[in-house]
Image (tube, rainbow over all chains, first blue to last red; front, side):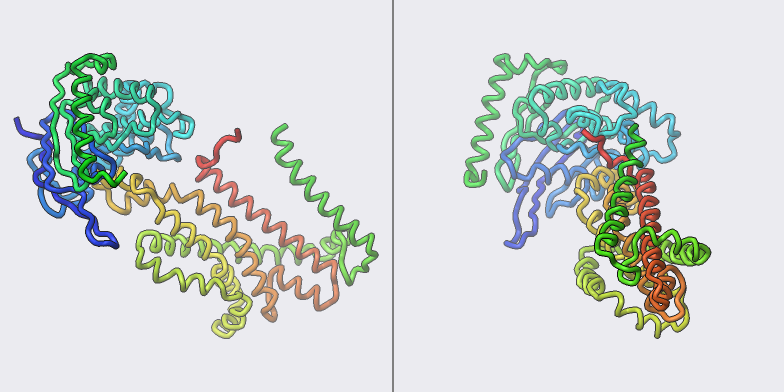
Length: 262
Length: 254
């Protein structure tokens, strides 16, 4: 099967006052179509850079990023993005926020059609009845749900998420994991999730990629062979616990490479 | 009840202010040529009511026109400074320097440059004095836009102009209106400066000047109050616009 995302030997350094700061070093990553890749690694290891590369927002110094068999040189309409900050536009209602990407990607689509699509998505994530509310009237978890709807409203091939649940409390986070799982069952997309949370990576991922400390390369890839319709309980079963231990060890190794940065 | 409070409280404050003013003049026994009291003003308005209408209108339209140009120019300048760091570095010292110049010193310069163009000079001064806060606030609003806000549209291949129209512009509106409130009062100062200093000027400033020349102190104070009134009217005009275009930024009181 062809990989939807193929990252081959990507190396990148930022220019700083003190000279170049290498963040990615010969990084490789392959995600087959429809799969969910969770990327974990020590903080500051270049995970966010990875999302910007896949989104075409920047170009790597060396190496290639392929999407759908095409070399990524600039942003493309088939990508959806979600961040830790839900980035809601305060002057728009929740519904208008979710519609935003369609205004760019499908400007000729009739308004009623755009709204119907957004309403359906909002219902899927449990925000039915909140369409005309302002973002400031919603809780953090609800805003993040709306942000997820906005990220996939234009049916992107790839959903890129940079620690989308990082700022939420534990229970809200687990709720959103389940929302995410249900969304995937109804709206198939390929996903790259950047996260700090190993339980999250095992619950949501089909594969978990462990990045080394900065400059990051692919240190370890774990195939999560758990059923697709997982429940939170599965995280407490021996198989998952074993995976979490294994990932924990890998993170420790990754941190060891430059243990002075914390 | 809430509506009553909204109008009643500021009204009561104004009445209290006038009462204290009247009281201070009365206690000190100041005659009219030292300090007029509020009770002298109705007579001045009754005597010169047609002048107040004509001159007040002149002051008002020239101020609004100057302000409108300041909004256009200030927004454009702010956009340039907001999007380009080079432009920001180049323009900031110039702008700050220009803003530091007391505008009264520019009156004779303008008067010589554009001899006899009283309307033009007045509008120009209202503009020159009021564009600065608008340019700075728009510039800062745009340059401090969080990268995520840009990225959600940039990742879809949206153009810079689309990002500006859909995100940067509306997001900057609250700051813009804050600056516009400052600019309104500044524009009035600019208009009046030219009206007062120019020989054969028009507008409320000229009326003030003629009161001074004729030793008509109640008239001078009546002009000041009329100016304050116009300022309040224009300010609340901006508040109304703000409610329409940036009402979303107002959080319900908790």
